[in-house]
Image 1 (tube, rainbow, N blue to C red):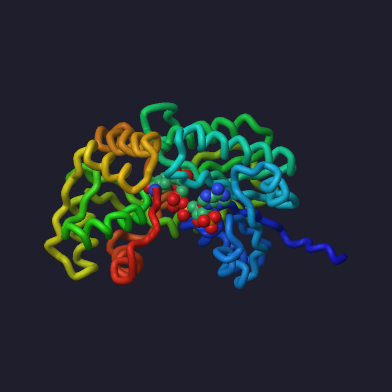
Image 2: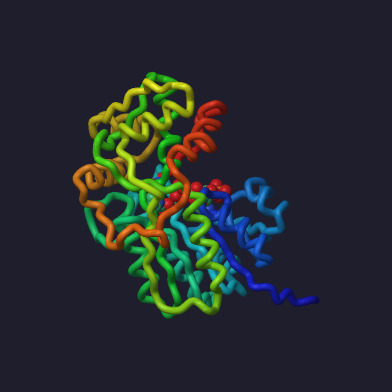
Length: 309
Ligand SMILES: NC(=O)c1ccc[n+]([C@@H]2O[C@H](COP(=O)([O-])OP(=O)(O)OC[C@H]3O[C@@H](n4cnc5c(N)ncnc54)[C@H](OP(=O)(O)O)[C@@H]3O)[C@@H](O)[C@H]2O)c1
């Protein structure tokens, strides 16, 4: 059988916002890409572009071992499980399976999709599970690049239902505090760059990833509203209890809903700070205005989109 000597990169969450962008870029660079997801049908688009689809769940260590075998770099992401009875325990179950698989497959380099605030052990909701994973990976004998992006612009897509149903834009985030936001495409660009390093990657790095500028929710609402022909769209901050009730009504577990509220509170109280300064090297280029036109408007005009958390 012929051996394929091209550098292989395996990406978990390959159908997701970030890994799908990174996978395409790596294919364009001429690397081999193994794309992991739960459904062959959803992996079809990447397969058509030349990726090797790999069906498996990230909590299955033996499947992930096979997925990681032969890869010079692996992209790891802990996907949200909104129904988890204990959100952090679920994140740790997935984290342990991925770490075990990386060890069994002899992985030498990991790029981990973490989050801003992952230097803090407690008080930040779902970000605490990413803190746990960073620590787990740091204790392993491999090179690891932790990417810590700020608030995804894609989170705004979760508000489309409220705009359509109630004629307002809202979330538990306060209206006036400007905070950094990044388009997931810009995270994918950095992930691809780090993954391409393969065997040359050394040590442990942390890169906080910011957007081109900071926006408050009131400003964000103006920008998003203008893009969908609603320049007078109003922003309403939802009280934590109402937001939690709404999440429970959508089938989100009490643990995960409580954890999101803890995260919103931490953002509003300024507790999710950065440890690095934003600058040309760690700011995405996509502005919220551009995101509003190219992603938010088409999503608003088609259907209620999938959530990003
Ligand atoms: N939202 C934010 O502002 C923010 C900020 C910083 C960090 N983060 C972190 O970003 C990460 C995810 O972001 P996202 O929601 O945008 O995700 P995403 O990149 O869209 O990735 C989710 C993907 O994971 C796959 N997946 C889900 N469960 C799986 C399983 N059991 N086994 C294998 N694959 C599975 C899904 O693909 P299939 O359905 O095809 O299997 C889905 O496409 C989270 O760790 C979050 O904490 C988010």
